[in-house]
Every structure is written in structure tokens, then in C-alpha cells.
Length: 113
Image 1: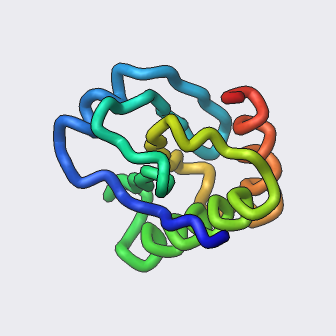
Image 2: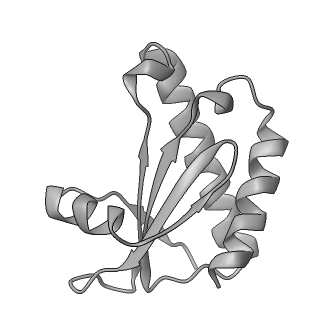
């Protein structure tokens, strides 16, 4: 079964997610909350990288890595589709190895369940 990753588009969705629950690690902050107008047919997720992290190439690389990690996690583990997720990258993610980021995100998702 192919699950579609859908990005948040409305400003109200971002603001409401920021008032939801939060999990932090050294690479990212994960905000998650149940949104009322969300369908369970897709995973509602957004990745945010601030301009202070680097130029557009570095920011897009971070987002590609996070998107790839999430698509792998959907295939191997149970992710709660009732929640909407917001990932905000931290400065330490730039020089981190892909496997380290993947392990920390996997451990954090075990806490969300």
C-alpha cells in the first residue's frame, strides 16, 4: 500500500500544530497534534528549515533526508495517521550522518505511540 505524504499548506494548521505536543532531540523538534479537518488516507507532515541553517542547497538536502526517512518509516513501522506532524530542523543536523538522524527519529516515534 502506497501512502502519500501531504504537506501542510494553511497558516492556521502550522499555528495549531505549534500549540500541540512536542518531542525534541539534538537534530529536530517534532510537533504533533490531531487536526479536525484531516483525512486518514494520507500522512500530513511538513519539514521546516530556517534560513540560518545555510543556503538553499543545504536546506533542501536536509528536507530530502527527512522526507526519505519518513517514507522508510511508513513502510517498516506503524505511524499514527491521526496526527499531523511538523519537523523543525536544528543546526546540528547539517553535519550529522544519515543513519544517526534516522535512529533518533525512529526512537522518537516510539515515544509518540
